[in-house]
Length: 355
Image 1: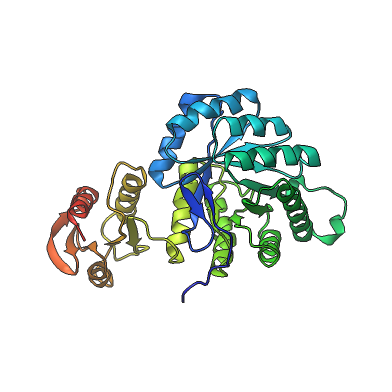
Image 2 (image 1 turned 135 degrees about the horizontal axis):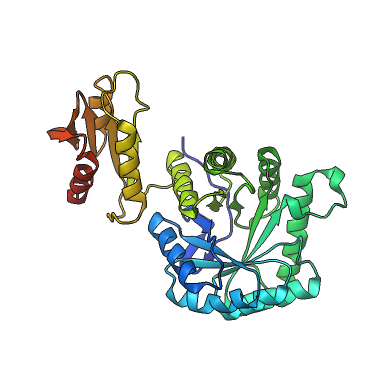
């Protein structure tokens, strides 16, 4: 089944273009104090290596906003300044050269202040994300439901921004539960053609957050809704990127350099397959292993029931028997591989593949 994407405006966030037929972009958020330039740049480099394309940075005060200039000069990915409460910080962040501003209508709502930020963004040639969270919605009208309130607030806010001459707008409507989030995005998708940034807020620890986010984001993407995604986790931000990539690959919307397929293991397996897969996955996602832009499929199978067949279907794969495995490359058996050297052997063989 081919997913039919919702038609949306095309806008640029630094070097990344979103909307239209552009690939769905992966976003994460740094968890360092932005004013700590060294730590923030290190985390941005880690995120870039993991596959992040857009990073949002918290701007708590003026020192954070000023630090963005030095960070922008050295960062390799598009940067979004996350602004709350003080609209003047958005102006300083724009002067520092960020690629996008995120405003929360729940705490920056005075019309003259919003217009001032929008005019500055228009002159700088950057977009604004209207980032609504269910937790910061006004209580008035609560009987109408969270989704309706968020949609109305986002569209009212967008009209203020457009009056300032800025039409490069992204919208996000994040609740902390799946049902409200799905309803909100489905409603807004039919009410405007702004690009939509998908996510679920306050999802919790890595496993629980990955499950909730995958259900929510995956459901919307299957309906063609969404232009960028962020998986919010109480975990290392690289995990956010890893889950986001897995969602996009599982839906066939993006193909990254290497896709690992492995069996769940059972009583027939005579090797610690989990250790091999975790080792290989960590070395791939760390950014230390570089490969071309084309997608490769790697199969690691724990026994002889389905193992050889799955390994033959992959670009490269290993089917384990008793203590050692048989390496397949483009469907042909190549050589035996030991358990202890499996991940290194696979990486070495992957580097030889050229197509």
